[in-house]
Image (cartoon, rainbow, N blue to C red; front, top):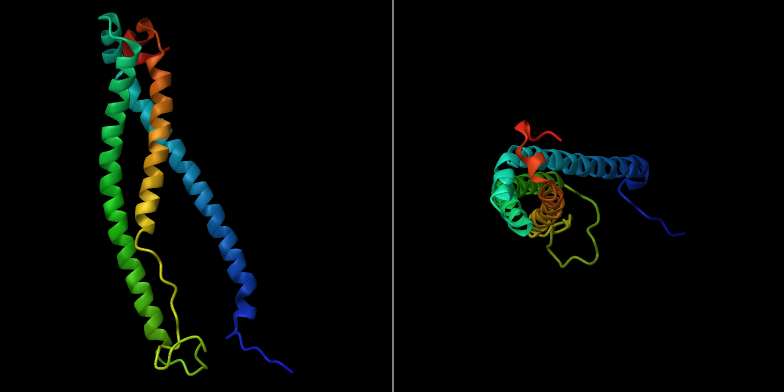
Length: 173
């Protein structure tokens, strides 16, 4: 008869799977809300620039020049925010992960169970998964690509408007 000791995992497995599904749903909803807020922010930003764009069009600027002006304006502002937010997020991530790992190691220091047979002699009884320090950078780069895509779409939409629409007060259609 073979006996397995799973340290109580089988008892909490359903709860962990439920939490995992909820976390995935929350991540998806958060990402969608982030994209919607970003689109509205870009639209408000470009709406404020419509009179400037109208003057540029009436003075003979090409649509390509409008597109470049709007895109560079949006991207400079977005990249500054991304750099500041990414840096702050990275520091927060590292601090939280270091604190969590030290709490886990402290809690496992009195563990009296049989250690993992794959661990070398004298190694701690708990083996923590190494989380790559590049993960926050990957997330920031992904956000940057999404920002670029949304900025291009909003910029193309705004640069196609006629000079009359652009010059109207408040930029209303």
